[in-house]
Image: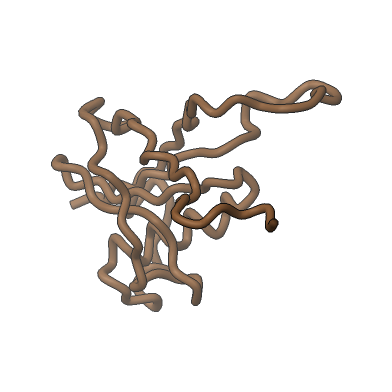
Length: 126
């Protein structure tokens, strides 16, 4: 008898509910995005207030997430995204994802408040 039982599906975590760092409304569920900097795509979307966001689910790809969010905000135009200047052309804010997953095993050391999964949000200046 195998370890996997027939007819059982793996548990799927629902998308975390996170408030927009700019307007504090709930962000819509993230979708797979392909007009981004990374070749493998990412999960993100756009808030009602116009902010573009990307999930950094691992918490270690902040630079990649920022580039993906900028490319998403520029509708996939990577040249334009790379020419934007922080503070002048766009504002960026991050917000931690507070998921309800149980952790197993002992934790070693202290986690920094900046560590962990985050939402990267980019607001273009008009």
